[in-house]
Amino acid sequence: MQRSHLQLALVLAVATFGATGVQAADSPLDYQYFKTRVEPIFMKKRPDHARCIVCHTDNNSAFRLEKPENDKGWSEAASRKNFQQVSALVTPGSPDKSHLLNYPLAPEAGGGIYHSGGRQFASKEDPDWKTIAAWVNGAKGTGAAASN
Image 1 (cartoon, rainbow, N blue to C red):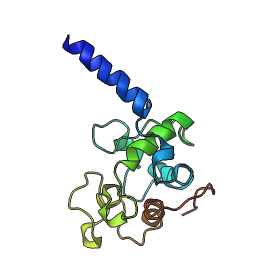
Image 2 (cartoon, helix red, strand yellow):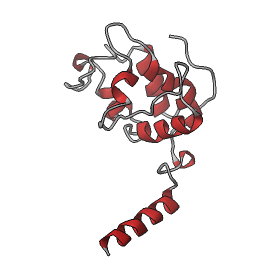
Image 3 (tube, rainbow, N blue to C red):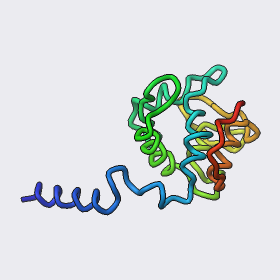
């Protein structure tokens, strides 16, 4: 009997929120900006650090990315899942309150004291940090990925 209640709850959740959670259209964050400017940062090799996808595709942390389709990026479905997952780690309009930006930021620059992947961003002046912060602050657009 308990299983049928669980199944009913699951059906209602999918019907209410869709198969991938809250839909991108409901978010104050811009999906196209995420896909073209933010998502490529997760594949980028940074000096002295592994790429975000190395640790964050096969883990159980709050920041979990889909596996890329190839070395150029993700499928549309995978990008939408990444958008949902990553959106949950930011506070729209508040980069300084967003886990996605604070965990990999050096503590001396205002970041947290723990990130097992090292300090991906030495400061808030890092171009990639600024790109993600712009998205959190509501940047919109479909422009090509920034060349950093």
